[in-house]
Length: 222
Image (cartoon, rainbow, N blue to C red; front, side, top):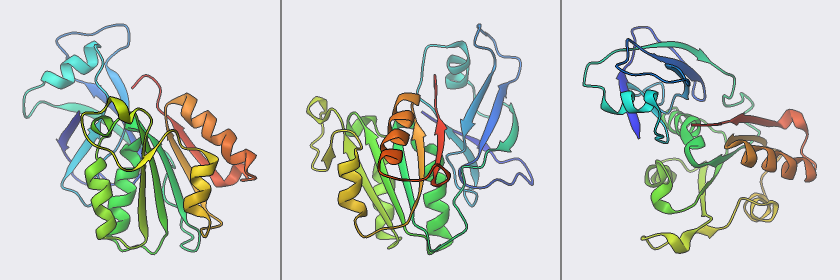
């Protein structure tokens, strides 16, 4: 689910950053507490501040899901340095799993809005198309930004109610090689569940990519 809030006056952030959100006097709580960290899914030029998350049966998310319009939360931030590098001569390869797409949505939208010359290739892995937040939007942006490519892959397409004609399986070294044969030397950004992030980091290092060219953020627990 996505949640949109009025952007605080003079709140400035860079695409890829995150905030800490605290519920104000929630009607219920549990041992996981009233604070969560969310990547900002909206781009700086959008009118609202949006976060998106997988829903779990926790007090925080039950309250968030049922909050009335005009309810208030407290935010701190922005934090983080998972932002697009300044060297426009180096491509950005974005590797996302599931809800890990949120910081990349902000990056891709803002790069398109500003007509940045960076070559951007997004690899986006989900189980099924219906499990993929912002998939249609991220694919459509290719028509607006000639420097941007979206490569979507599904690990369980047979369980989908929608036809799927794109890539299948996990993001692998072979898949990266097919799309990046004429791209380089890039900087890699990896966001998703800890297992995916660790696995892709190992894959990239096995392909000879330096640690300094791999930037990661793990989404644990959602």
